[in-house]
Length: 214
Image (cartoon, rainbow, N blue to C red; front, side, top):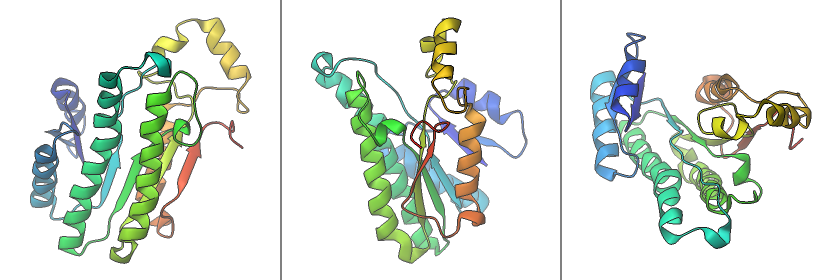
């Protein structure tokens, strides 16, 4: 397994916990970085079986207050980063004639508008659209492309929103499963889509939100 990030210290520390994990520096906004990482993975492992596009940033701001710089920042990571990763991996897969699975992390905000998250929603809708179009384009090569749409997940991206335990409790009471999602809930869905058990799933949006959008 190869993990990649711009946070080299965190990435290297994570990789050091398991000798089956290696780390590569990757700025998802860089076409050259993507080419370098994909080339290195194929050289080291002989093939590339799965890509999980999970780099992402959020912004809580009214649309009227969102600057062009804000919007371009979200697009560069959430949308362009996903696009570049899909291109790089699909090219390697087609060239090697080895099918692969691409899993793009979108959001429930990529299925519906979310107040005060207009820019974020726009980028996640883009990920949903890219996923569906790519699935139809690359299916002939055995490349499966799916998106995962997390709801409210207890993660570093949302921790500031739930510092108040009373607020957290109120949110949980409004969730059908009565708890916040955990990173492992998303990881389990990704693992399924990466596996042969999902061999007939492509172009689909898999929602993992505790039943909110049932």
